[in-house]
Image: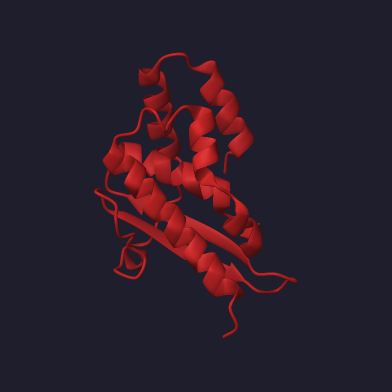
Length: 141
């Protein structure tokens, strides 16, 4: 998977928003496909205009749970946004996930000014779902 630093660097090379949108679509194409079974109601993210699924896996073998996410969407640009969010949060300890603000990265990339309110709400819903899963991983069973 591409690192968030690589995505930020690539974004800075692209001057035109058309090119940045194409790059987001390319990121979405690189997402590892979700299985058909993972396209279920439990993994569906509420609050997204497009269909979005996020599958969460929790590794409890270390001192703190580490969460890994996989995702998908039925819309090309949204798949790119899913990839961006998963790059920010996946394979990280639960507390780090809770403390990380994805919208700071979106701001840095200039995306907050170029996303429709509907897409911005969808991104927030996805982030809240991921943070909820991180909080769940930290709570006693």
